[in-house]
Amino acid sequence: MNVTMIVVFALILLTGCGYVGWHVWQLLPLSNVGKWVITGALLLCFLSLFAHFFIDRLSMSVATILYEVGNSSLFIGLYLIMLFLILDLGKVAHLVPPTFLRNSWVGTTSVLVIIVGLFVYGYLNYLHKERVPLTLNSAKTMHKQHRIVMLTDLHLGYHNRVKEFRKWIDKVNAEHAEAILIAGDIIDGSIRALLDQNMAAEFKKLNAPVYACLGNHEYYSGEPRAKQFYKDAGIHLLIDDHALVPLTDGDTLLVVGRDDRTNRRRASLSTLLQKAPKGYYTILMDHQPYHLEEAEQAGVDFQLSGHTHYGQVWPVSWIEDRIYEDAFGPLQKGNTQYYVSSGIGIWGGKFRIGTRSEYVVAEIK
Image (cartoon, rainbow, N blue to C red; front, side):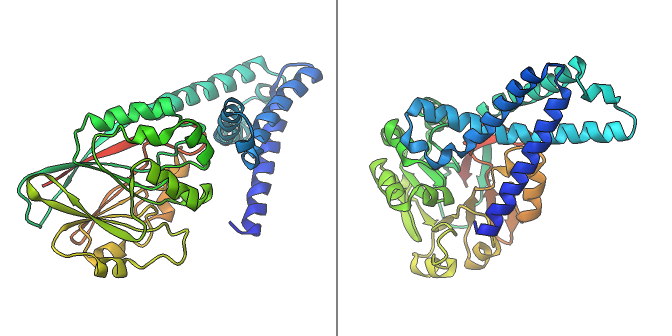
């Protein structure tokens, strides 16, 4: 992210924060002291977002609270902006009385009920992990049908902690897959958070071999330390590399893992496929779903991507649909199948509004 983008992003945040703060001040039917207390508390919640710059120096309990509060405030703030915009437009159209937005118990209660109700739903919806069945049709000779589980965007760290990760492991192990593929962003942003919770030991409880590629968040956390974590966790890390994955009854799967596009010097897909053996059903893991036509041109059978989270909350999902050819779900281009997963985990606030958390169970026929 260049300096201009950082400045623009900061200005947007400050403008939104000011807009919400002004409306909250006008709305609350309290004395000035009460208004200062409430708006000050909201401001502190927002400022805790910047704890990211020194979060690894704090105790795990304090770091966890600051991460949860700071990142959640972004999403709650977004919906407060949308709600106040709707109310302002309603006031202009004489549909909302001015008294509803000024020193109003009715207005305050209404806004509170809407926001709390929406984000309780969003949190519960995030905790629910959707099982997505997927059929992959192979033109290559196979002796039987094979099952693999595919995950993206675990974002393990201060918010997706070890207790929650164990529930995901139970769901994956219940599938009795022959292999598990993870297309990037296992790490949220802090290696320290994973080391303190001994996450590497949890990966060894998975009942099938794990193959993974890097995502952009592995670079944010520090690529060398991320690689060491993958090694300690017993994960087969594919960085511009391939692996022949043995399946039952003598069948074999070719899995190719691209380095994340954060690395501008990563190898081209055509170069990777030229080095790989031929004649096997080929699955490509590429974290960010850009230039999907490359997989079709290279003769890949199936591509797994993630990264988008499908926006995490509506209406960001609409923006994602404009950015990517396929921001979420299955796609077919020629003989190549694609699936862009919204991820089993999430970045920031643990809310899913208009999107879902998921894991994919693929049957190769």
